[in-house]
Length: 79
Image 1 (cartoon, rainbow, N blue to C red):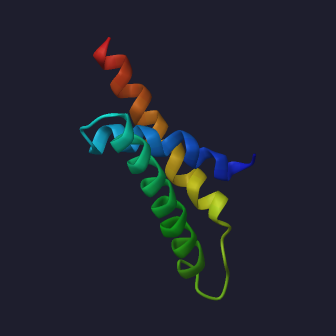
Image 2: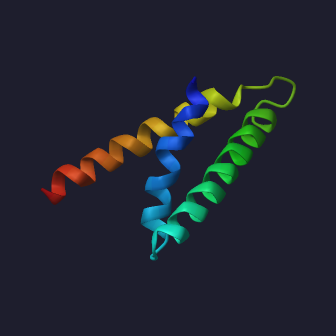
């Protein structure tokens, strides 16, 4: 629910791109990448405009939209 659920869509694609292994490796990699993604975007949201805080969901959306555009673009070229 909400924009943090976007991480659940991004993390498995990133894990599949970065890791070569079976389903156990991809599952553990997806969990680790998802946790790191939320941690990094929350830190960016807190430190980017120091006195102000940007919610992590907004930063995830700003990162996730270009990610999925590139993913769709690469998928279209592969067909």
